[in-house]
Image 1 (cartoon, rainbow, N blue to C red):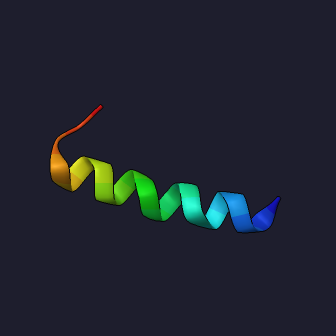
Image 2: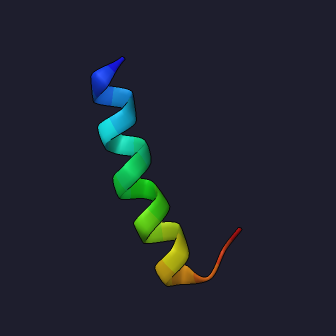
Amino acid sequence: MAYFLDFDERALKEWRKLGST
């Protein structure tokens, strides 16, 4: 599930930017 890990990392950065937990 490498594709998922890559997406998770990117999503985490996006969520952090939005300030959502």
